[in-house]
Image 1 (cartoon, rainbow, N blue to C red):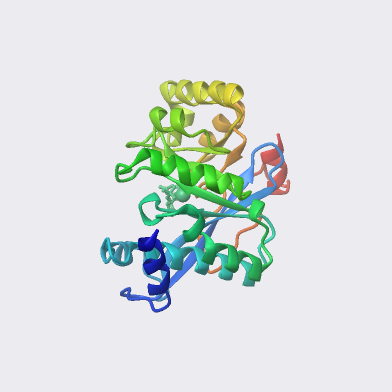
Image 2: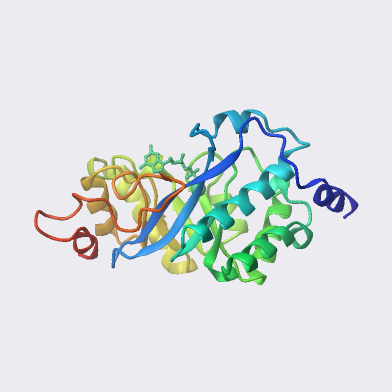
Length: 262
Ligand code: G
Ligand code: MN
């Protein structure tokens, strides 16, 4: 507990190589084409990718980094007139005590007029989560606070079935390595279909991420995914929002949204 309080007091000044800001990428409802959420993706204020900032992360500044990302994403999204939900990536290893470490996020969300149930927290196991029980505790605490939760990159690395066995989130984001080439690959379609079977049993929504072409979108819609995200529908927008599926999506002469609703 003392540790988390020290970390909280250390907040304020950021010691990262470039000032942080966000790009936002839209997530759409598959059946209606309506905007479901905007995912906040870290960028440098100078337009650089997040690589330089990630390279400067240490055990000491991880907490401040994670807090800065959340507060930046919430503040900027509100200033841009967020109309849907906001999805934020978080690092389980940067959270010590869920209740203590969430305070700045709650303050930022309240100041921005964003209700807790409009915030989604995406977690993954990019580096093997050091303490699975710790992650489960965080997710349970977040749910009690009314946030939505999502497993990111499901099916890649360590973010797999054993993680799902321990925490059933509101949303499972199926990794783009499975979604890419969905239109041409029977094996990938079979995998996605079984994830959808699981979702019917367990009650989570399935999001296909990394949709890059028409064939991939059609295959995902045919299989019945709930949510879609990817360059084909909308690229991350630097300090801005894309709010309708990208042009050229629908058959000629039809508004793009209609094609998604079929
Ligand atoms: O791990 P996570 O899914 O949060 O990663 C988001 C990253 O994925 C961002 O850097 C974003 O630019 C990238 N991304 C989003 N959509 C696509 C896509 O359709 N194809 C590819 N290759 N990358 C994507
Ligand atoms: Mn993500």
